[in-house]
Image (tube, rainbow, N blue to C red; front, side):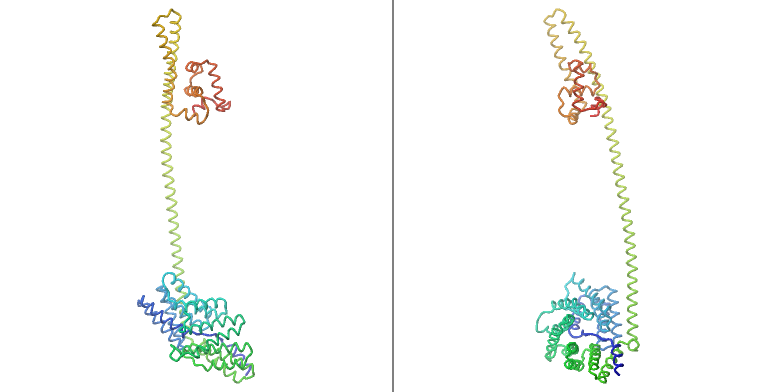
Length: 513
C-alpha cells in the first residue's frame, strides 16, 4: 500500500493556488460595461458573449467549453484588432492555461494582455481596475514559476492601484497571499505565516452583507492550505494537519479551487504517510488522483474535446500568424522595391541636375572665353593703334626737334621765340596723351600690376606700360625723355623688384597681367 501511495503521489500534478473569481471578476465586469458603451459592433457583441460564456463554463468546471469560447473570442478580437477586447481575451485564455498548469502559455497570454494594457494607456485613460487586473495576473504567473523578485514588483504595482480603505481590505487579502510566497522564497516562513493569518482573520470576519461573501471566503481553502504547508516545513505537524483539514472542510463556492483542493489532498496524504497513517493517506491520495484524472488526464473522455479545441485554436492562430508573416514579408519586399525605385529616381535626378549644371557651366565658360578673347583682340587692336599713333607722334616730334634746332641756329625774332615756346609746351603733353589713352584701353592694368608687384614707382609703371605695347628701348627713351642706357637700367631694376628668374621673359610676364 505504501508503494502504491508513493506511485500515485509521483503521478499527481501539484498545482499552486488559483484564485480569480472573487475580486478580479468584479473588476472585469465593470471594465466590460465601460468598453461596450464606447464601441458596440456586432463582432464586439459576439466577443463579449463568448467571454461571458467562457467565464461561466469555467465556473462550472466545463473547461472544454470555456477554452473553446475563450479561444474564439481571442481569435475575433485579433481579427478586428480591438485593443480593449484583446486584453480581455488574452487574460481569459491566460487564466485557463494557468488552471491547467500550462505555465509558459499562461505567462505569454498574461504578458501580451499587459503589453496591450500599457499600449492603450499611451493614448487614452485606462481605469485603475483594468490596470490592477493585468498586474494581478502577472503576479499569479510569477508566483507559479517562483520568480520572487518579479512577483514582488507586480504586487507593489497592484497596491498602487488600490486605495487603502476599509472597503478595499479584500484586495489586501489576495495580494498578501502572493506576498507570502515572496517571503517563503526568501526562507522567511514566519513572515509568510503572519501575512496568511492576517488574510484568514479578514475573511473569517467578513460581514454577512459583504458583496460576494461566499465566493471570497472560498479563498480560505488556499490560505489554510498555505498555512498548513508552512507548518509542515517548520515540522509543526499537528498544526499542519489541523489546517490541512480546515482547508478540505472549507466549501468552494466558486468551483475554481478544485485543483488546489487536489493539491491539498496530495500534500495532506504525504504528511499522513510520513506518520505511518497509510490507510488514511491512501484515501486522500485517491481523492487527489480522482480530481486530476477527471480534469487533467488527456485519456479521459471529458478532456478529449478540450485538447481538440485547444489544438484547433493553436492551428488557427499559427495559420493566422503564418499569413501575417507572409503579408509582412510581401509588404517588406514592396517597400524594398519602392525604396529601390525612389533611390533610382533620386540618382537619375541628381545625374540630370549635375548634367544640366555642367552644361550651363560649360556654356557660360565658352561665352566668357569668347567674350574674353574678343576683349583681348579688341584690346590688342587698340593697343596696336595706340602704339602706331604714339610712334607717329614720336616721328613728328623728331621732325619738330630738327625744325626747332634749325630755327634756333638762325637769328631769332620775337615771333620765332613764341613759336619755339609753343613747340615746347606741345612736347610736354605727349606722355600725358599716351598714358590717358593707355589707361582707357587697359582698364585696371596698373591696379592688377601693383597687386602682383607692390611698391612700384611711377617711373616703373611707365616702363611697364611701354613694355606691354612692345616699344623698343630707343622709343621708350624718347617718349620718357631719358637716355637709352637709363631705359636698360630701369628694365633691370624692374626685374629685380619683380623677383623674376633669368629664364622668365619680362615682356611675357607683364602681358600676362
